[in-house]
Figure 1 (tube, rainbow, N blue to C red):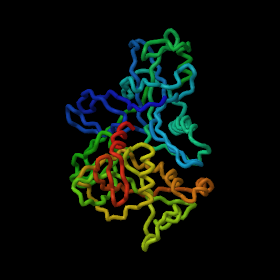
Figure 2: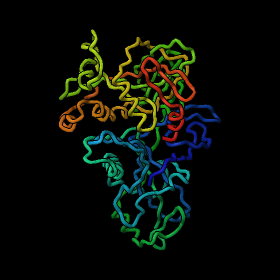
Figure 3: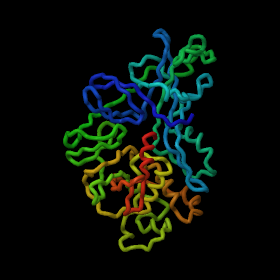
Figure 4: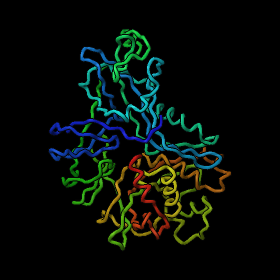
Length: 412
């Protein structure tokens, strides 16, 4: 089932217990009552459960569904194809349970799974990597064949548990209606191993690890800023980790700064060490300039979510037109767009980006399988754009971003 709505999650402040409602993309939570800010962390992926109407004496079974939400890219004989996907599918192959959660995850308010949630939580039999591959495969069938390279970018992979119990047959506990299947409860427990959940959300205080100042960011931010010591931080496994960054200065005091990931990677099987190598590999209509042979080649990607076609266009344009202007290691005083596309997801688009600009295109099918790409380091770079009537424009780079595309990206 494809849709474009975000999940709504009922939640309680970990500090004061006040009720709140989150969107699935929210990572930074600021309590309206106690004003404490926390950053939400999950081990691997977030796990949610749908509400039920079962009575307290019913023994609930929670059946798992993988949910994938993100952008698919595929490179084939006709170039790059892309689409946005939002789908769910069984994490255990069983014909007596619905194949997906359908629209229920958007129509109902979910809750986070926690260790004190009663019920039998069925253990997934399809792991996260395989689930992503299967869900993506359902939608790449419409792309031109053969597919030589594909990627999932900006994805949100989560687990949704739907409640059932055995009464007059298997009963959907959301509506308290029989499903039409009549399995035995003991047989279900034996055939579908699981137990009590052992997962919980972790919280990080949003205090700068370097100076203790309050860090700032939007609710869906993957990078937080400390204005006091001019530093940026992203969540790691158990703590915030510093993010290297730079800013291309602007003469305008009304510039809007957009964040981009600049990624240095080793490309095996292709001479692509310098910007001069890029000019040759992409057959760019430019005369080689002094210093280009020693200027390192880097891949670029937006660090903000935007629709697939725009994401790919910006990644390619910045990769082919390296911003050469001097950079400063200070945060912009002007407006900064939120970093909500982490570098781990930006890395996924590198091979698609590379396949799209290599020339002649006829050599790509033979060249692509033998290429190895090893990311080595990255930098978050803020580039200044001027607000025009419909677009944000950087005249020096001849790049424009539609303001409506940025507004619509809030739904991704």
